[in-house]
Image 1 (cartoon, one colour):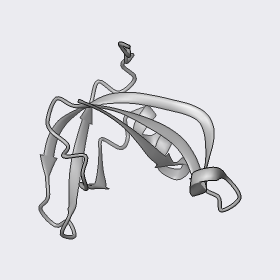
Image 2 (cartoon, helix red, strand yellow):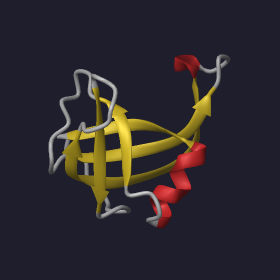
Image 3 (tube, one colour):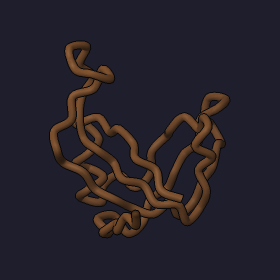
Image 4 (cartoon, one colour):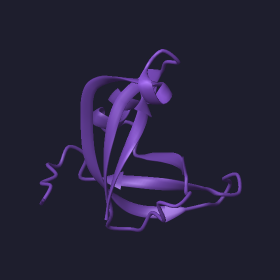
Length: 92
């Protein structure tokens, strides 16, 4: 399964550079699984934009390689990322 996710600007480049290899996310109805792909779309909260988020047009994709909830608030998970920068091909 593929997930499109918002990613704050402060954390976007460290993921691209490989310095940040994991992130905590709310595991709501997405039901993240190892092997799923994610596309992180960089931006910041902005009340004037539709959806409350202003995107920078930068994005990067990766594969979820490990999922853990140790030390996380209930309902959150820590996603480990691999193959950062991979190309996602969407089939219609």
